[in-house]
Length: 238
Image (cartoon, rainbow, N blue to C red; front, side):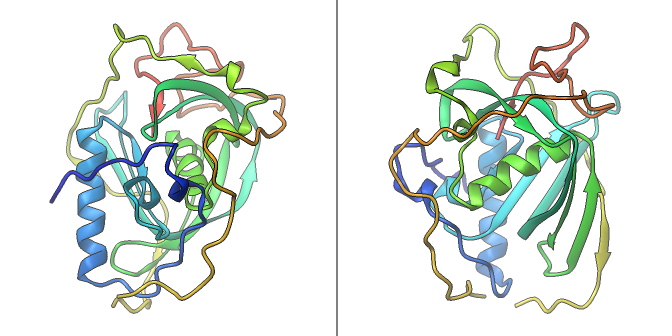
């Protein structure tokens, strides 16, 4: 495995729509392994292939559960969010926008489908921290950055250097969701158009949605975007 360079927001590749993976071969497996290693090396909780300069629809998610101290890992190829429930305001950072964080609207619960790293169909519904990470990473595949949800870049906050990101590692646990057998593994990406959100750095703010209810579990933040007093993890860096 190798630690890859993380593409930062100035690179127009982050604003392009990624291609679907048609078959899963050895090169895809190497990319996934490298993405996991890169995510860990940067103390992230998730990484999308465009963040390492590869315009393929692949994401890796990995975080430590604060109560069980177990490592939750999820790898998805061609992920798609098929349903969303609820709203809350989430504090987010991004490995591709180092040094800053912001508060953006996210769904409380989502349903996602895609394929695992072996090409098997996966469908899952989650309202845990994984739901938050998945929304951020899947946005990357469509050329969307979390800052696009801000009214203005003035809403960004600088990361306090004396508060390092916390991340513990432990053994992986089985991912959430139902797995259907039958998809054929095998190498290249589909020949589809790679258009999408226009390049040009941190621009194009979207209107902000007012949060309604805090998630019942799975996040150390309340819906107002402020940390609870008993929060034990820092902001997501994905």
